[in-house]
Length: 496
Image (cartoon, rainbow, N blue to C red; front, side, top):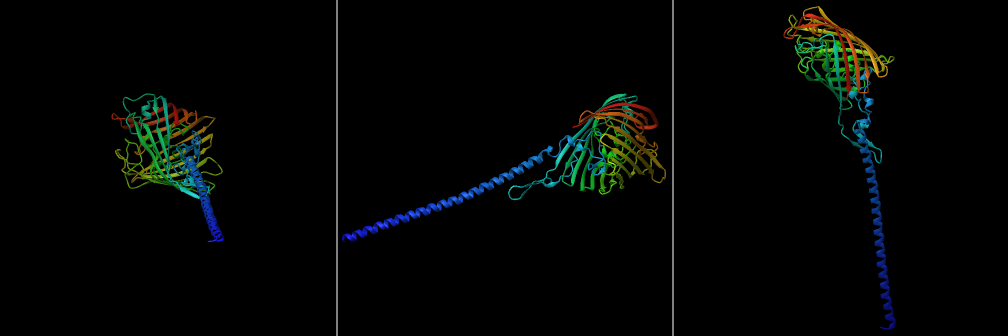
């Protein structure tokens, strides 16, 4: 091969090498660009995922904060704001007996039905896409307590004039002065849902005859709130007789005076009225009516079989006869006169007294009851009157027991002086009400609210009192005792 040929061969090999090297360089560059592009795409995806994670964390923070806020009891209302002012129960919409005339103590946690998404167990998050998280609703149970301690000084044997109806006076018990433990009342409520609520009241009370402590289930009721104008209550409740029985319950801290008026006293403490009802109650309010008209109706078991030797109580499980007690009535709260309420109701039931000599086997009872109250923050006026008529089967003669009270009080700062005149006149020939005794006379005193939760009451009572004598066995028998009773009392009432 000549020199030119050799030179051309070398040149071709060099050119091929350069081309090869260039090709390899291009391939490397292309690989680097592809890898860089892939890394860039991954970085974008990673950045997007990080942003989404931050948004999710923010939504979880909102949800957690909302749950914590809803869990705080103070979130709804401060404790003091939910505690009623002593002795001033406003004439408000009581969804405590759920629509009854009167009010359920505010401290009983008669919380209104919750509203909004939180009430339905939902929290909405407004960051990022619209997402709703369902949270199960758990009923919240609230407990309040009421109690009192008292002392009495009287001109008569307190064991006789304060003894429970039909209970013998112990021979070793007696005296004109005493300290006394009042009722310790446990009040439990629960807002089950927007439509249903539950209320129960348990009383731990000392018995004057035995000096022992007993436990009574005073109320146990569930209420269905169909709407703001219609409610229904089922269970053991306080009957809708007048105003006092639906505004003041077993906790004495709420009432102005030390004790209830004798005519509206509880059945096991000598009262003649069917204070408790085991059955159902319905209340209808006419919201567009300027008179503030409310209609109500009750049906229940009525009083169980009883005698002179046992006070009357409602039949909690088995009624002693097929007929049921009924109570229908109405009351108004005029829009023009805030604090005014007036009403009337008619109660009827069958009574079956036993172990009473000469008593008929069956009585029909009618109760006619009227009330007028005017309640303002610093002024209180209440007046109620009732007539109980018992008619034996086969007879047209009606045996009447009457009673009532009128009460006025005026607040001056934390002091509230009061005056009350009360009357209860039984027919001693009526086996259904003879044992309640006659109590007629005035009461006066003053209540001092030491703070939001403690009150001190001082009271002087004067009664014309009549009741049965006791035989050697301790049973109430004729003749009728007649005494003039003067009694001075002090009471320290509290809520916790």
